[in-house]
Image (cartoon, rainbow, N blue to C red):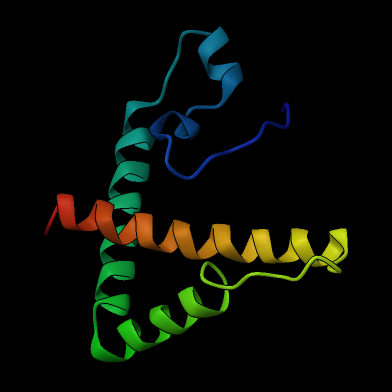
Length: 103
């Protein structure tokens, strides 16, 4: 089986590229993965829309997205902060997706 990069937002990640070559996409597996993604989005929303979750997400935003490193910061510190920012932005994106498709 070939290794391939997965992206959690793409439903087609449920399909193994070798299955596409054989024209035998497993629709049941895609449905299960879509259901899993929906349930996961809802779990994120419930967690971070709670009063405590909002406090935590606000703190995460303040310490990552709203934080600036000084001009003396090295590349490793910049890369680390950028990774943290991406994680917080991803959580916020998941919460928005859940709000667009409520239970």
